Amino acid sequence: MALDQTFVIVGASLAGAKAAEVLRTEGFDGRVVVIGEESERPYERPMLSKEYLRGEKPAAKLYVHDEGFYADNDIELLTGTTVTSLDPAAHEVTLQDGSRMPYSRLLLSTGAAPRRLALPGSDLTGVRYLRRMGDSDALRAAITAASRVVVIGAGWIGSEVAASARLLGAEVAVVAPGAVPLERVLGAEVGGVYRELHAEHGVDLHLSTHIEAVVGNGAAEGVRTTDGSVIEGDLVIVGIGVSPRDELAAGAGLTLENGIVVDEFLRTSAPDVFAAGDVAAAWNPMFNRRIRVEHWANALNQGQTAGHNMLTPEGPDRPVPPMTAYTKLPYFYSDQYDLGMEYNGYAAEWDRVVIRGDTSRRQFLAFWLKDGRVLAGMNANIWDQGDGIKALIRGGATVEAARLADPSVPLADLG
Ligand SMILES: Cc1cc2nc3c(=O)[nH]c(=O)nc-3n(C[C@H](O)[C@H](O)[C@H](O)COP(=O)(O)OP(=O)(O)OC[C@H]3O[C@@H](n4cnc5c(N)ncnc54)[C@H](O)[C@@H]3O)c2cc1C
Image (cartoon, rainbow, N blue to C red):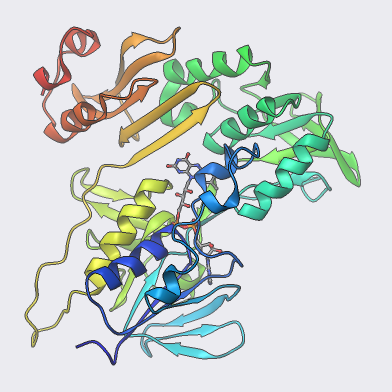
């Protein structure tokens, strides 16, 4: 039925690979082309700051699919290939060699890229970023060779890299503007757990500290803070967040707002163009707002939903089975030293944090509430409460803080 159609996926990423898989499992028999600028077939990034960085897991564990998957499923995978422009009116994309590829439907799963440090000394040798497999390979070698590592930023990447560098035996300093690591997402109390964790593992923490330059003569020798002191380090790892790779969409005039704006079906403002993963600012009916999520599960799940919805015909002359709305709760996880956690939900702002359990033993649940309702919940070194947390968030009922904090009250009794 679709033999004459070409579905193009730009971004050989987790979201892109999952979309391609769904196209085939749901019976699409047209042409599927996945285009990615990296030389690798699609892989997952979380281990790049954890086991892979520490040399504990091989590259083979990172790939989304086995090597033969793409050929076996008649998916054309063009690696090492950059798409340079998109023309939604003509329904075609242009590749770096100037050739054009027409599409019937298009998915943009172009992800995100690390924000660059814009300070004097940012281009010194020894200033590094982490996004790709090759970055992680280079960092492992650099951490091993460094006499001291300075990590700029105490978000997820900065915190995880600091932990891995310590586990690799490096001397590590972290410098960040927040009063605690992960302050923006977790707030003071739970972020404080991570401050203690890193301090206990010997990280030299410089919190509430702003830097004004990377110093060195050709090669980095440290960072200078705004109070004029220098934190020494011959390897400077920058983890100050990511920006959506929305340049193709921008060039094509698609609606952008902190990423590519998509509706709950992951459709962009251009006909037949979808977006998924880190690049997509998707309307979330549950939170009644647009959310761009920069996490693994979102890329995986949105990729699947996008693949499914790309297959749904639209138009007055066709029967229109409903597309699937993407309504999953945001979810992410992090592992640092012996503290593993999962976080469900979305709390951009909250008026109360409730803890159940013992933060000093690092075994607890934490809940972020607004007007008595649970917006987000985290399980730290507890692994059987995720469903209960999700149900509380989805239920949307107001909960009594004292009962929420009481481990003897089952979460199911609170909704
Ligand atoms: C070091 C690290 C650790 C992480 N750890 C965790 C974790 O513990 N938990 C968690 O939930 N999440 C984690 N994440 C986040 C997670 O990996 C991302 O959310 C996920 O990779 C997003 O996938 P994506 O499919 O949106 O795109 P990406 O993975 O960003 O891939 C996009 C791809 O598109 C390519 N591309 C972009 N533009 C073009 C173009 N014009 N032409 C061709 N190709 C193009 C890019 O080169 C890239 O290969 C981590 C990320 C990193 C970097």
